Length: 98
Image 1 (cartoon, rainbow, N blue to C red):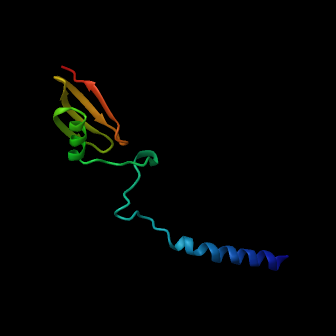
Image 2 (tube, rainbow, N blue to C red):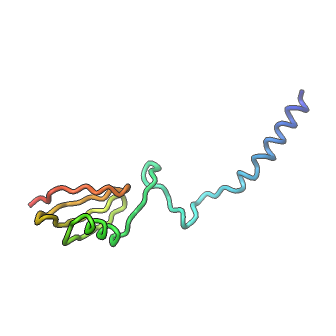
């Protein structure tokens, strides 16, 4: 019985050793890191955000990128809007405060 347990232990350790050597403590440069609380975060450049807003009908677009969200000010149908683009790309527009 002891030989059987020892043999199983050796097989287990030999089988899992390559997995431990393949791990890295830092992400590769092209992988990036997860956002807050492990959320998968895709970021847009300011130019991409501006292009998305313009294709949605906004004009006079000014974009400011932040760590977690992108904010913008723009005009649509003659009205000014404060806009937030969240980390998932959702556009949230509210009428600008005077």
